[in-house]
Length: 601
Image 1 (cartoon, rainbow, N blue to C red):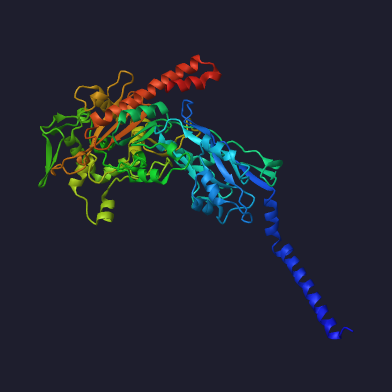
Image 2 (image 1 turned 180 degrees about the horizontal axis):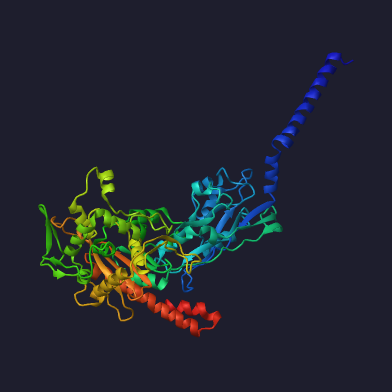
C-alpha cells in the first residue's frame, strides 16, 4: 500500500513539471514570442527595396550630364540559426570573411531585409554567383541604380558625385527613412538638389521557399522616379575652359549679368566623379587627398587672393560716384610715388607720363590709382567694394565659400590693434595688401557693374522663376559708360594690357590683374614664387550679357595667362548659343535635344 507521503511527493513532482511547462510556454509566447515569430517569418519572407531611378541633370542646352546605369549587387539573407559557410561565401563574392561578418552583425540589421555584401559586380562575377545559387540559396543578385558622369572631369566641381550615407546623415530626420546602402548626393549639384533628384524607393515583400526561390508577391510598392534638373551651365563652355587651362591650376566663373545664372564654373585641376560611382577605394581617396595640387578644392569658391589691378574696377566706380575724379582728371606718372622711406612703384618702370581716366584704365597705371586712393581713403574704398559684392559669400550654396576680405579702419583696429596708414591705402588701391577676393566674387562684381548695380544671388538653375537681388547700388549711367569704355580699351585699343583677348566673334571688354606672391624686393625663384594672374571680362562690352572672372595660379601676367582662357570661354558660349538658336529654328520638336547633343561634339 502506497504511503501518504509518497502520494504527496508525486503530486508535488507532477505539479512542478506542469508549472515549469506553463512558465516555458509563457516565455515562448509572451516574452520571446516576437523573437521566434521573426525567426519563423524570416524563413519564408524576403523584403527587397526597389531603388528609384535618379533624376537626370541637363545643361542649359538640354545635353545630359549624367545617366543612370545598372549597378549589380550581391545580397544575403542571413540567418544566425543556420549553419552558413561564410568562408565559402566570402570566396565566391570576392570579399574577406571578416568584412562579411562585420556587415552581417550590424546592430540595425533586420531579419526580413537582405544585407548588401558588395556592389558594382562585373558580368563575370554575376554569372559566377548565379551558377552557385543552388549551393547558396541565401545569396541573390539585385540590380541597383548607379550613376555615370558623361563628361568625366569636365564640370565635376559643379555636378558632384553620389556616395553612401555617413552615420551622421543616416541619423538625420530627412534621411532616416531611406533604405540601407542608399546612394545620395555628397557633393555639388548632386548634393544641393539631392531631395529633388532622389525620388522615392519602392519595395517588395516576397514569399520564398527553403531554397530561397521566390514563390509569390505578397506586397509591392513601385518606386517613384526622381525629378530632372536643368542647370544654367553650358557644358561646351566648361569643356573649352578645361582645354584652355591645360595643366595650369586656377578657376573660372562666368555669369549671365541679368539673371545671375552660372554659365560656367571650373576649378582646375579637376577630378573624375566616376571614381565615386561604385564606392571609391581608400587608396584612390587617399591619393586625391594627398595630391599637392588639391583637385578636390573648389578654387572658384574657396581660393581667395589679392585681386591685383582687377580691383581698379571698384576704384573707378568709387572715384566717379564720389566725384573725386572726372574723365579729364590728370595725373603724372613717373614710375612711382614716394611715401616716407617707401616707394610705391608703377608696373611700368619709366612711368606713363600724363594720364587721364581712360588711359589709366587701358594701360593700368598704378600711380593714377594711388592718387585716387588718397582721395577716397580706405573707408571710401570699403564702402563701394562691399556694396558691389566683395567681402561676403555670394549665396550660391554649392560648397562653403570663403568670404574674402575688404579691410577698413575698424577692421584694422579690431584685428591688428592699430591705426590705418596711408601706405596700406595705397596697396589696397591696386588690389594688394590685405584685400582678398574669390573668383566667383569677382565675376559677381563684373555682373553688378554690367547690369546697372544689382547684386544678384548666383544660381545654377536655368531660367530661374525668381531672380534674387541681394542688394542694389545706384550707379550713374555716366559712371557705367566711362567704365565700359575703359574696359573696352584694355582689349580693343593700342596700348591696352589685354590686346590678345580681342575677338572677331564678339566685342570683349576686360581688366588684367596680378596678385603678388612675395615682396618684389625679395629675390625668389621657382614657380611657387611666381605671381598669380587675374582677368575679368564682359561681353559684348556695348551691352554686356556675360561676365567672366579667371584666376591662374602662378600665371604671372593676367593678359597673357588668364585673358586667353576668358576669351575661349566667351567665344565657346556665343558659338554654342548661335548653333542652338539655329537648331531650334530648323529642327523638329522631337529632334531638338538630339541636335543640341550634337553641338557639344
